[in-house]
Length: 185
Image (cartoon, rainbow, N blue to C red; front, side, top):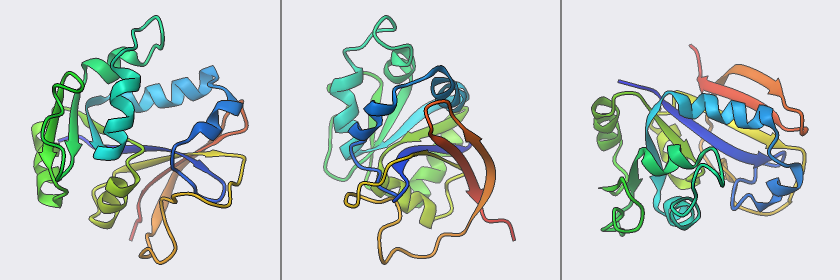
């Protein structure tokens, strides 16, 4: 049984949606290495429907020459949490719909996959995983910008979510890579 490792690009005010705002900061080697460290142990990618629908057309046409991450995203098994999507394989190779969100189904998937499950984006899914105590590592890549509006990982009115800091690293482009785990008693 592997770990569930979540990767989110976020602003200092917590916005996580459609991170086009990251482009101004580039993708330096240390950022690539940090994300590569997350994907290296992953044998599966767990995505919500919306993120899957954004990733599929973007990644499925890329080759290693376009982006060093392309083989990971294209060759790794992808598990899509959705109660409305019925066919993921015809959209993006190695993709399977696991049905609507169920903590029990995610636990079973953890047992089935030989290695870690990597989650990118998928804010709605990540909120549910956090609420059910299923996130082993939450990697927040905090960009030095506030947007004022947008989807937040922890929206107003969300339940209190205590976490433990596992690591903090400043990256060359001004991004802070913060790693959290479940709160320690």
